[in-house]
Each structure stands twice: as structure tokens, then as C-alpha cells.
Length: 594
Image (cartoon, rainbow, N blue to C red):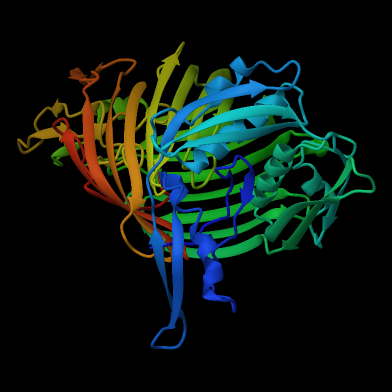
């Protein structure tokens, strides 16, 4: 079945760029034969470069609300790549530096998108080297006898064009400077199509506009160009009252007031009140993405939170804090966040009757009380994703550290690192991803508490409830007043963890407009380590096994991009577990595809 496609720009078999029309979702009043070209971009992605639409007929549907269009097609032979190479006619550009960017590898099936990506990568590299006017021209040689296509990428000096001005139209509430700062170029700079594409993507990602177009018009001279930004504003504020259910927190009610473009300045303001079965919280956030109109973001969070941890342990947790932060780029793909946190954290053990068969862990009792934490930290992010929301290709790396001990009662270094890679197949319908993540908590001067340590489960380790794996205190207590056998059953978290996740998402045959996808996943990892695994209280000694026991799970996912937001259902089965682990076979939550 032919689906709506964006019109790609790709080389035809004579070696010249070709623009192909777009197939529309709505039938327009034109002869059916004119739609034949819309199918042309589809099969060259799978090697059928001789694909021809022989005829097309349109038939009115029985309900007279649409048309059935039937195409008679001829695929022809499937072509594969022959040798690919790079030549340069530009002084100073070495072809050897561009050859590693070639995606069109000999023997693989011809795919026009790989040609497009190769051209984009070479154009971008030339721009980074200061060659703003370089054009990459693919010269194609077809061999019908061997059914191969050989491509030579030619680097040539293009015409010198400069940006005369940037015109912004349609922004009735958003300030001009909010849009202008999405551009890496200004008036008088060399025209760079890649910079225009990046600016277009950034403006669309702002999500301030229902329509955002960036086009180029002729300037006052042949070597001048005018960049026109044409937008249509949309509402960016929201007032939401939500009722839902989370596998972790049970029934959830939330009240949110948010403005993502405060006073048209691009500032984000958000107040959130959440009341759930196990958690109550209030948070106020403010963020300025361009402080003093520079590429420097600054903001802060104020929060108060109460959490019932009885399901995974025997205590309640209260947190209140203030967290200011600044964010700035370190490169085109890298960003660094610097932050400070001052918080008051309280652990309140659950009091149990002496006759109860389940007692509160003496490790929890020893950590009870209030603590103040004063810490500084940073997070470095290197982002090579093609789309930050619906990622199909790319790589994301994060590394963060927090140093507590600038006053307060806690002294530790907390480190977390993660790396995730995506790739896609079948024209982006099947998305594969692999991720590794790990953390370490090192203390000096004081012991850590359950608030400081890491917990896994839920979305971070599917197949196990949040906080339902890792070091578990199941120590026996002395018999109760009536001779009852009493023991603890509390997860304590760990100072170290490591997890690997493999996952794939794919269509399940339903119409694309339903927004329903399927997925499979596998998680493997461990959580381990305490500052001390033995404690003596009231003359009794209690010991916890805090070794690095491996856990693993596999499962299926169902994703639904609903009108209420993205919904995800996980069905998981632990294949490696330990006695006492709290397993979770079903999980319902909000979240995007992997």
C-alpha cells in the first residue's frame, strides 16, 4: 500500500538532482494520472530504480466520501551499489577526509536516502572547514548488465551568495529576537543551506507555532538572498486538571499551569500539583533559554514532595529543595548544565506492632531523621539524534556528577553515565535502540541513606517494580511476645548499578493515523553495594547480602499516541531474579516510543 510521503531530493540516474512531487492525503481535483509521479520516490529506496507506474484509475467509494486509486506498476530489476568515491575540485579539500562519510557501500541495495544523507554529511563537513559555498554533486553511472549503480561525489565550489536580511512575518506575540536566535547566521554572512535547515528545525521544535516556514527569496543582487520566516502563532499556555493511573503511584490527580512562551520571550513557567496514592508534590519551575540574548539558559526549581515507600521499604520520605541551574552549549551537539541544590530530606520509619510478622529494617531505623544536603553538580550531554522526540537514528551520551558536602549533613560524590544509540530499517518503520547506563555513589565522612542511594525498577528496569530489586534486608528478628516469627522485608537501594537495554519498536499493521505501535525489549543489569552490610542494634546483629546479583527480563510493549498524550503498556517477564525480588509483569505509563 502506498503511503503519504515527503518529496525527497535525490539524484536521478543521469546524475542531476530531481525534485519529485508530494502525494497528498486529500485527493485534489486533478487527473488521476498526475499522481503517478508521487509513487516514484518509494521504490528507489529499495533498489528498484526502473520502477514505472503504467496506469492509474480512480473509483468513487460506495459512501461517496472518497476515492479508491489503483496503480498498475512495473518494478523492474533491483539495483545494488557499485564502487563509490569522492573527488574534489575545490582547493584545500582533501577527498580522503570525506570518504568515511560515504553510506553507499558496494554490494548493498540502492537506497536514495543513503545518498541524501551522504550529501548532507559532506556538505556539513565542508562548512565546518570554512567552505561555505561547496556543493556536493553525485555523478551516477548505471550498469544494467550487472544491475549496479556507481556514485562519485564531486566537491565543487558553488556560487558565492550572502544573506542580505532575515525577514520574520506572522509573529503577533513572540518577539523577533526569540526567532532570530535560532539562526547560526546573521545578515551579511555567507549563505549556508545547512544553517537554514537547522534554523527551520529549531523553530519548529520551539512548538510556539502551528505553522513555521523558512524559505529563501532573491535579494537586491544576484549574490544576495533574503531568508523569510513565516509563522502562525498558536496557544502556548495550558491549564490542565488530570486524573489517571500509574503502576508506581496508583491513582494520580494533577493540576498544572504552564506557559512555554511567557510574554512572548520564550521563557518557560510551570506550576504543578500532584496528588497520588503514594506521592504528593508541588513544584514551581522557571527557565530562561537565552539569558541576555546569549546562548545561555538559566532557571530554577522549587519543590516539596512527600512519598510513601511502604511498598518497597518501611519508611516515608519528605523532600523540600531549591535548585538553580545554567545551561550552555559546548559544541554544535554538546551541552553542559551546571547546578546547585540545597534540600531538606527526612526519613520517617514506619512503626509496626511488636506482634507484626513484618518489622522495619534496623538499617532504616538507623538512617531515620532529618538531613540537609548542599551540593553542586553538572551534566554533559552529547546529542546526535535526528529528532529529540521521535528518534530513529542517532546517538545520545550523558555524564553527570553531583558533589555534596558544601555544608549540610551529607558528603558524597554521585556519578551517573549513559549512552544510547538508535538505528532504523524499512524506511524508518522499525526502530532499534541499545543503551547502557551505570552509576556510582562514593561517600566520605558519613554513610549514605536510602534517599541518597540508587533504586531500579519500573521504567528503569522492566519486569521489576520500582525499588523491587537489589540489596534486601530480610533479617530475622527475635520472636515476638507470642512467639511470632518476625523478619524485615525492606529494599535498601545500592551504591552502584549497571543496566543494559535492547529494544525495538515497529508498526503492527494498523493505519498510521491510529498512532499505535508495538515493541519488544530486553533488560539486564544489577544493583549492589552498601556502605556497611552489617549492623548491631539492641544487642542483635543484622546482615544484608549486597552482592552484585544479575537480573534480566524480556517483554512486549504497546504504544499509543493518543489525544491525551503518549501511552505505553509493558508486559514483562523476569528471566533472572533473586528470592524476594518484587516482580512487575504489567506496567501502564505515559511515554514515547523507544
